[in-house]
Image (cartoon, rainbow, N blue to C red):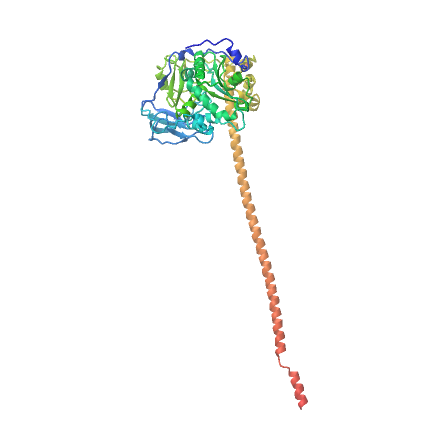
Amino acid sequence: MSIKIQAGTLSKKLKKLFNPGAGIHPEYCKQESLQRPVTRMQSTPAVDLILPLQQHMGNKPDVLVRPGDYVYKGQPLAAAKGDVSVPIHASSSGTIIAIEERPIPHPSGLNDMCIILRPDGKQDCGDSSMAAIVDYRQADEETLRTRICEAGIVGLGGAVFPAAIKLNVRPGIPIDTLVINGAECEPYITCDDMLMRDKADEIIAGAQIMLHILKSHAPEGQKQQCLIGIEDNKPAAIAAMRKAVANSGDQCLKVIAVPTVYPAGGEKQLIQTLTGKEVPSGHRPADIGVICHNVATSRAIYRAVVLGEPLISRYVTVTGAGVQQPQNIEVDFGTPIAALIEYAGGYTEQALQLVMGGPMMGVSLTNDMIPVVKATNCVLVQPAVKEQAALPCIRCGKCAEACPADLLPQQLYWHARAKDYEKAEAYKLFDCIECGCCAYVCPSHIPLVDYYRFAKSEVRAAKVAKQKAELARKRHDFHVERLERAKRERAERLAKHKKKAVSGDKKDAIQAALERAKAKKAKAAEAKAQTEAAPDNTQGIVKEDSAS
Ligand code: SF4
Ligand code: SF4
């Protein structure tokens, strides 16, 4: 199904396209994967599921199972640890056969801890399901946020930040707009397009749940709105979403077609396009009254709340000249990419490069036994890309013109290359969304984004090292202070004791002196008494003398 977008629709609805003139128009190559309907690939005992513990931003969850345990589909396998974390659930019923390090989809190419689950093919949910909150309007926001966290929901647009935290806005912060991101601007990727065509009602229901959670943040005297931004190269998705909005009867929801330009789907870029408001450097959308979630996240929220389903699968685009039958597949997390490609008819002779994500922001994968995770929106199999040798920068300024974040990529490049990270930060290194527009237009073929990524990782590592050093210094200071306090207290105790001893000696001396004086007095009194008691011989003699 396709619709014709009415002339004038865009100009009336759009506030301001991000940084006009910025962005690029690469070859989109989306049609290949839109030719087939979406199918559900079920897990089978023949293919083990590999579930990395770290599939989201934040803390790694704590493992709840051991090898040999039987688990039901949807059962939590690892529990959220700390505030920024989500649990991991079993994508299928079956047996845990190992908990060990395996390669994960990450630019580092390193291994990480994974739970290996052998499916039994029964899809048995047992009694592990969460209770459905059918009438979510009767539930308070905390209950709904807890459910979203318990269901393991993260941003499915690629950021994989826990969704419940994004919806937990600090008290007193007004939120006037919920943005639902259906722009999907990266070439080749069509999973959100197909999701909007197939599950528009569920996406809209998820958006309504989010509005319910955010309703206490409505600015005084103002109604909240929900703007759903979709690039105008997806007419079928726009039509399906508009129909779902009409079915909901909810006046605050609006579907807005945005111009097709890469990267229209960047969070800050879409917010600016839809609302006219710019998220300042170093701030979050909530600071300007906006919360933004991807369409797939919205659908997952609906299913978690109203149906009690945890997040265990997603739509994934499998495409590129290296795949026999490009298409979108709903696939369980943990499924190895090799099995997914086989499901899509296998590799073609041109298959040489494997990428998770699109050609602009994707991560190159080293092998196809890496699993589908929550962040996997696309598996792109391409022929070998001819690497062009980088030439010196000619200061043409094309990179700055293309940058949607209004940065100076050339200066960022110089400072990143010179490892002068302080200056790179001063040029807003961390505002770079790694969209790759600058590298795309650079006539010298400089891999600019690689420099920025490396610089960011170095700055982050230095910050972590500084924090650790600071912590170690504080611990050392505390230890020294404790020792000194103990020494001080001991000295005080000793002094007190001595004082007591000295005053005791003095008392003894006084007592002895008193006793001596008393004894002397007593002796004197005794001597006097004896003197008085003795016979008066002198008187007797006188008497005898007078008688004679
Ligand atoms: S586009 Fe490339 S060559 Fe031109 S200024 Fe930027 S980095 Fe230099
Ligand atoms: S990768 Fe960064 S610097 Fe380059 S265009 Fe995108 S946002 Fe700008």
